[in-house]
Image (cartoon, rainbow, N blue to C red; front, top):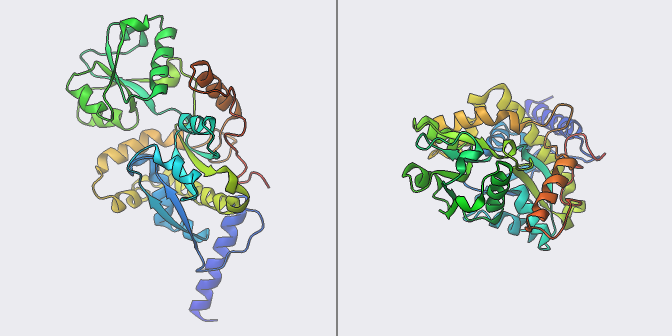
Length: 335
């Protein structure tokens, strides 16, 4: 038997094993017949996407029969719109954005969690050092001007028994870090503890971080994989294979972070390697599903609690997350 034929058979066996390992329904994959699969990120490529680039570098998507095309948006609100319009197969977005989009009538659904816990946080520097929520009284807090960030702040202040009128919220857009570093605000709400927080620490600015789910905001999945709800029947098998390959990428990242991170860094040479390395290191526990659950797990109780909170704050008309997410396409699920 020729080496070429042996290689072809090996590729076929790998594809079949991957399909079985990620809970794929009966489907035949042929060597060299990868179909195009479009993914739009939520923001510029960074450590939060390391598992995706690790899987791509290792060839896991190709083994799953997918020719992954990664797109970067010029506006964080664009990914959900693109997937709703059917212009990409999956998009990465945020749980509150997904819930709001559905509330406004878009037929989108979360099919997996990329990051299990909130990354959004309150960050301050040494002067003044805000180490507990009650110290926000009399302070100026910079946000990106997003309504649910204002709701986060109000909830945090109420729990800490701080009069909201004593706190000035300032819309600084996406200039969160620069506004904090230049002391235009005393703290920011909107930066990620695993990215902006790490960036400030590496710059020896001594950041102090308050994670949202530790100061009164119901926990949620910061980053989720969003699909077109109307296209699940047709696109479901490919989505299942994508998530299975991504799960392998995250496992690769766990086993050998330095090697697996090369996929992100080589594709995006402008990124600061040290920042990405440190960010992946601290985020790794939140890339992984809770014990006993498959990769990408979305907890129904947490989703409903967060949707209920968004309804109570007036952001959503709907009171629950029914239909907003599905775990059907996760490894081993929905068979």
